[in-house]
Image 1 (cartoon, rainbow, N blue to C red):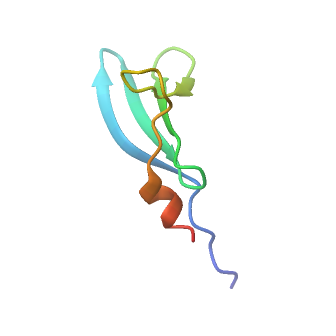
Image 2: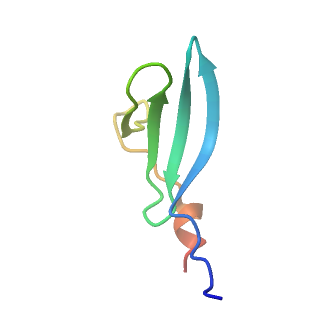
Length: 66
């Protein structure tokens, strides 16, 4: 049987918001965090930014693939 590749995208956090959900999703290859919104409406995704407008990157995520 072929070895399963590790998941590229991992849900780091989730939180209910009314009838929908907020998710912080991490791209394990780049470490970039995304904010995803889903529920009764179509799903949307955007890079998660810090207070200075910079993309949030988890350097630890990148290290797991090396």
